[in-house]
Length: 253
Ligand code: NAP
Image (cartoon, rainbow, N blue to C red; front, side):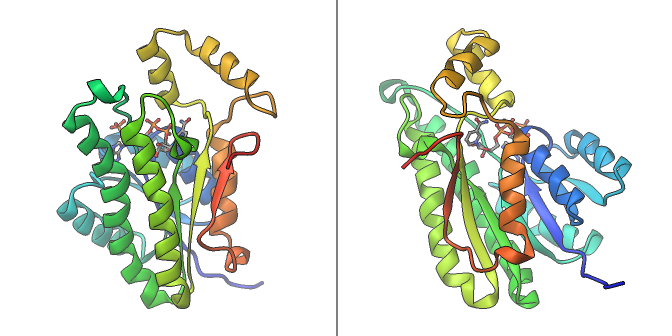
C-alpha cells in the first residue's frame, strides 16, 4: 500500500452553495477541509455531512475581509488540521444596482469580500505553500467579469479576481504553487435565488429563462463547479496555472 500525504484545504464561504459543494467534493477526494464562513455555526452541518461520509473537516468563522481575523483563523487551521496548502477563495456577496443608484457602501462591500478577501487569504496561505513547496489556489470569478447590467461593482471585482489570479500564478509558480480561476455561469444557489427575489421573478422561472440561453440547456449546480475545482487542485494539474475556466454550459470569451 502506498502512503500519501493528506492535503489540507481551506474553502471560504463554504456554509452553503458552491462553497459547500466544493468542501464536500475536496473531502471526498481525500483532503481535510476547513469550512470557513462568516459564522462558525453555519458551517457545522457541512462538517457533519463530510464526517458522516468518512471525511475530516472543521468549521471556522472568519470574515475574509478582516485582516486580523484571517491571520488568526489560518493559524488556527494550521494548528487544528495541519498546514493548509490548498485554498479556494469562494466567499462572495452581491450588492447589485444600476450605477446611478449604487452607493459607495455597495461598491466597497463587494470589493472587500471578493478582492480584499481573496488577497488576505492568499497572502496568509502562501506562507504554508512556500514551506511545503506545493500548493493550489482556486479563485471564484464569474461570467459577470465580462460585463453585466446592474453589477458594476461585482463585475469589476470578478474581472479583478482574474488579474489577481494571473499575477499570483506568475509569482508563486516556482514554488510549486498553481493559481487558477473558475468563472461560473448561472448556478442554482441562494445567491441566484436572492437575485430572483430582488427582481420579483419566481426562481423556477428565472432558471428556465437562463437555461434557454445556455447551450447545454440547463442551469449549473454547485457540483458542476466542485468538479472543476477538484481538477485544478489535483496532483496531476501542476502544469496548469494562471487560467480562467468558464464553467457556464457553453463558450464565453
Ligand atoms: P452564496 O450561496 O451566497 O454563498 C456565499 C457564502 O459566502 C455564504 O455562506 C456567505 O455567508 C459567505 N460569505 C459572505 N461574505 C463573507 C465573508 N466576508 N467572509 C466569509 N464568508 C462570507 O453564494 P454562491 O452562489 O455559492 O457563490 C459562491 C461564489 O461563486 C461567490 O464568489 C460568487 O460570486 C461566485 N459565483 C456564483 C455564481 C452563481 O450563479 N451562484 C455565478 C458566478 C460566480 P453568509 O450566509 O453569512 O452571508
